Length: 230
Image (cartoon, rainbow, N blue to C red):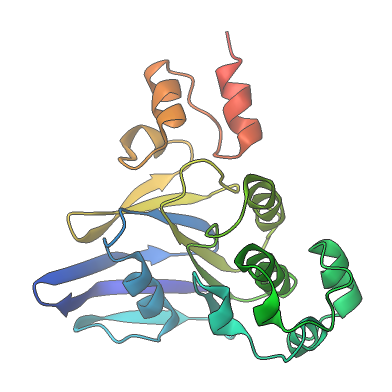
């Protein structure tokens, strides 16, 4: 299975973003400044926005989901319990995992943004998709929840997962790094070879690269291990 951007370009004068590249199975990280076009590319990846020119082709993809930055856009249940059930999940499992015990009969929209975000992401990650597109999944999560989300996401073993984000501290295990530079999606390559040429790399990664202590990946464990090398 793969997703191909064949000179896909979206224009909204005077702004535009373009992409050319192949996304295969694994976890892909797409970074870029705010307003660079991450959400636009996420929508094009999922087939929710047609490019102005070129094409986006999805081959071998039988199931896909795009998760937007704001979790309220996904709510369909009248209660937290119904929301879990709408995803085909046992509410008891999801509620326990997300520390929402006692709030099963509340409207999802009565939760805080952070609570709703972790409820949504728990529902998303409890299912398998050939193509999973995550637009700013770290938004509204505290550091503890970001770390837990990364741990769960790192365990995905099949399908294509594409994360569009400007996050600078918490990352899952990543197979390939991309970034939007000067209005164009550019592939930096696989991990760890891509790290020295990653323009949007967090400062801790830059510092380790300067010391020639390149981490094996982007998880906190990988970074600590690299920093402790002699």
